[in-house]
Image (tube, rainbow, N blue to C red):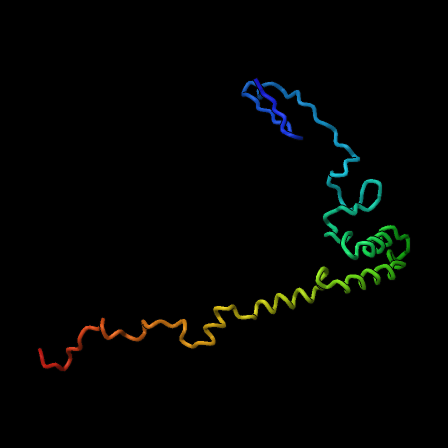
Length: 158
């Protein structure tokens, strides 16, 4: 005999071996096409742009969201022979906005420059050892006189 437990929005159904032996009578709920939380692609079935699509990487929000939406909409709905050719001013405005916020929208060459500088900068341990020569060397190369066996060569005992 199966048991059903509702936990919030979820329904948990525990079934027995006998329950699995008979065909399921579960009814599937049809998806709501107007569900705003349903994941969709960039373009909705209506042809509109899905500004909540994670594929936009948050560009539709933030300080340059309006400029991005204007440029992207212009390109998407463009009917020109060279698609988007009438949108250059919108893209220029978006680019100017993005350049005003370099901390939010780092340029590709800025990223490469930061990566290269972090690879070539010495770590604090490396720089400390470079400043004090021999700091990482051990005294194992110099024998300790207390632990050395006495030198018996030439003492005359044979």
